[in-house]
Length: 121
Image: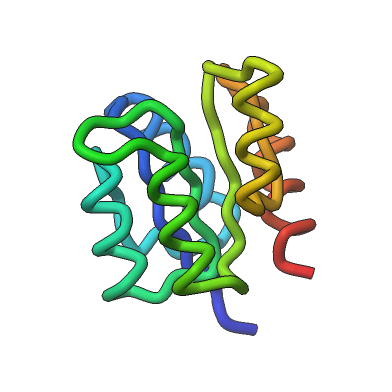
């Protein structure tokens, strides 16, 4: 079975490191990391991942803008939003744009793995 390819998009270096380490330990292939929304979009265009882990608040282009663009170009890409900004409005907006899962920071490692597994079904 081929490894699930993941792009991590978060402006926080520690979050990217923690997610990357967690994913690699669980046999996922981290194909790219983005520190802003524009880079996230470019990585999805060039690397064609199976999953995008996406923060809401990022420089240059926010997570919702990325999500809108991703959904129109790649409707089947699994998008899991991981954010500390988990207000009811943000969760509802993310659902409106078609996220697969919403995870609140600080995240639980098992929850991230389970969310990816559910999103890939």
